[in-house]
Length: 190
Image (cartoon, rainbow, N blue to C red; front, side, top):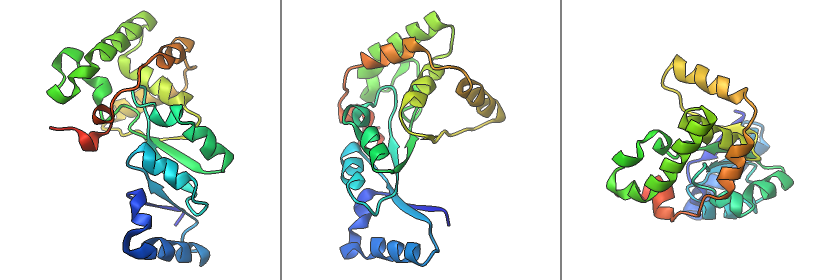
């Protein structure tokens, strides 16, 4: 097996670490090439990055969730030769919601989503393209994108082949830090 990730970083210490030790043993015997974790939040990702046995991390980051970027996570990962996969680049679909139709728990995001729509109109692209351009600018080689149709796949591939807009980079640098309750879907009160 090429890579095996634990679903949460804290699983490394469950049952006195027996699960993680077993995975390390399987890696030493050649059954698994690389082991790592899927971090639930930035704290978990930052803790795991200091463990030399964690070689691969899957983390959430997006245009609105720049917590790891602002904490220098990606640079640290690169320096420590960690392989990083970035998921939730559309913030669990928030990128595709209409600002005036947000569920109550996400209403504080309406102004920034309106700004993204304005930028997308100025650039003559769909709002989702801005989110994907931003994700591509993160210093990680691997993006995890969900696809429901061939049309979505082809659209994503087309966007991936376009140059990253300097306007998106400039815009993203001005996005405020939002509360964890807005950025972490596990905290959303549905």
